[in-house]
Image (cartoon, rainbow, N blue to C red; front, side, top):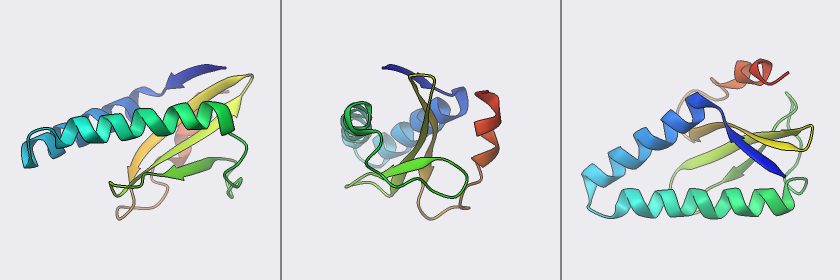
Length: 100
């Protein structure tokens, strides 16, 4: 399965990595590793997380207060957002329209 990060999701990831790296050296890298781990899991298990209203799925990170919002369309995993759990919920939902 092919994997595509929407530009906004990629920027969210880079911003979060930079923030955590500022807090403590190596912490940003730890977040990147956790996101990479979960993306690999999603590639192999994309249908396991429940389908949410709005037609997307999400996987919560274990260590950091973020989740990965995604959908699968035409054999492609689309990463819609790397979203913070405590910020506006589904602020990114309109990004789904960029895929079709």
